[in-house]
Amino acid sequence: MAPQQRPAPLRRPAAPGKPVRPAARPRPAAKRGGSLVRNILTGLLILGPLAAVALPTAVLFAVGLVPTLVALIVDKNREKYAAISVGSLNFCGVMPAAFELWTGGHSMELTIGLLSQPMHWLGMFGAAALGWAIHLAVPPLVAASIAVKTRTAIAEHKKAQDKLRDEWGDDVADGA
Image (cartoon, rainbow, N blue to C red; front, side, top):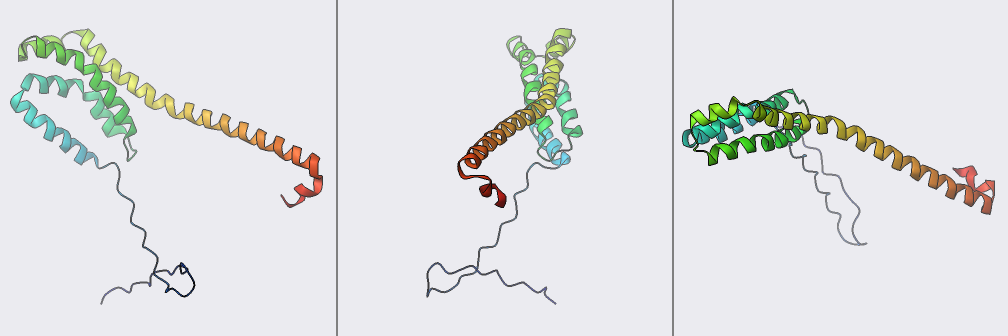
């Protein structure tokens, strides 16, 4: 037995005498973000061929981008804002070591040497920490800015309302 379909809602005709057409059905909202498993598989899909072609680079990025993976797992938001802010800055933090690897011979020995230097760890994880700081600090700053703007607009509207009340009297404000 097929489920019953409701008739499409009707809208007013465009002009008198023209037939009424059914209203367009709203489309379902597009999915944003994605599942954690899909994101990790996408990362493996990128790192897999990279490991086959450039193993030292893949190892450097796999180790250096651990904070991004943590942000991806920890962030419960569908849009993964934390992973985006942490990941972009974490990627920037890995790039100096990657450039040094690419210009210095591109070997596993050099990769291990780079990963044994504390300054590279500071660059990679410090950039990720900066990404977390941005992710945590920006929303309250934006909210405070919107609140100030709203209070200013309310004050301006009250001034305009008081001006109208002075011009027209209190009877104007009775309906408000």
